[in-house]
Amino acid sequence: MFFWDHTFVLLIPPLLLALYAQAKVKGTYAKFSRIFASSRVSGARMAQEILSLGRANEVKIEKTAGQLSDHYDPRKKALRLSEGVYASDSIAALGIAAHEAGHALQHHAGYAPLHLRNAIYPIASFGSTLAFPIFLVGFFFSSKGPSILMDIGIFLFAGAVLFSVLTLPVEFNASRRAVTLLEERGYLKGKELDGARQVLSAAALTYVAATAMAAMQLLRMFLLRQSRD
Image 1 (tube, rainbow, N blue to C red):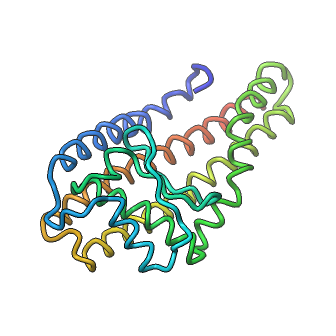
Image 2 (cartoon, helix red, strand yellow; image 1 turned 30 degrees about the vertical axis):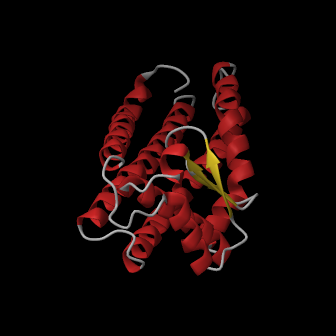
């Protein structure tokens, strides 16, 4: 957020969306983690079968601590499933495991948006860490017009915003792959599929909120820079 000023109002809508998305994810996950799939296959086993079908046998499936901490690590080719997903046969577990397996299949198949996102990750990570401190130094210590430090801060944060934007098609594609695989292989059926869609849609909303917040932060930086003109 970095400090309060008149442009802070821009952050209110994405902040409310983020709070709603977090509550939606927790509520949807809690609901469908208590409803078990008729296939009675665990998240880990299903993910392994999906990876084998996609010939991504190099990907390791590991258990990781925490709730909703599931993720795919492309550097180590490891699909990490949380304790509540790894051994569970709930609708939520299968949806989440299939989604993460979808990321592994994206990586294996050379899905362009994923590789582009991974390529700019170091720059985005560096930019998101240093953009605001550099921008603020330029803002508070420049009395005559915008400083080069403000421009550098904006440039660095623009990389982080680009990373967030590229995340959206990657996540949406992984969810589409997940639902298709769950249906085609018979892991979920009928209303069970609807439940998985709700879980994945709620998770996708968190990425939309994060992107909206990042975009508004960038716009705010532009407006603050113009205030120095």
